[in-house]
Length: 285
Image (cartoon, rainbow, N blue to C red):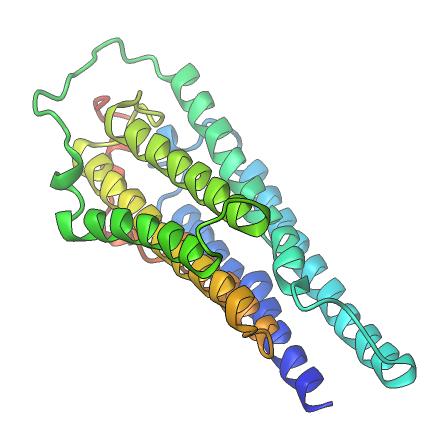
């Protein structure tokens, strides 16, 4: 019974953090932009009618509240089922449900790509400027952080093999492949941010540099957390460390949310961004 209570507390914490607290911060940020930088003064920031953005904000809020309600109902149903019949949802359920909790943020990110596409389409400025200085990874993140990512990647695979008598197969192979693919994806995202086409046609050079730094550091931290999590799961298989697996799983997913969504909320404060580029008389950057 005590184990179930701990599970419910951790899962409730996950629900509040990912479906209420963090989304409310993101929503407040978006609403502040409309209030502080209105379309009348910053028309380039709004390729669509401002009403479309307000409707989008309401959908984002309702989407998150929906998953919060579903999660609370699951806790109540599981508590009743466990008390009446025993058993209940699996220990890895918080991670499974967390994927659904991330859907509103994913939808918001995809909407942002559409926003940038409309900005480029409505951009009538034919003047283009090129950045003469070449962007390099170590200009935005410290070598120590990059070496930590690489070192933990290899340490995770070596430790997993060591604990399983250096035999590939089963969970060992799945973890190695998954970790490799995730890190490859992160490297591609960082490379695109460093050398890819500027999605926002009005973004200043300073803001883009800050964006590259934030994205690179965020993905580095995520890679480290994932490596540490895989080390724990590998050790759990070898030494049967599964008593509080559900707590670790949920804490891991909450940490992932804090790092990734925190990139939006705290990584680039609104006060540090140059909104003058969105004014009617501003030159394209």
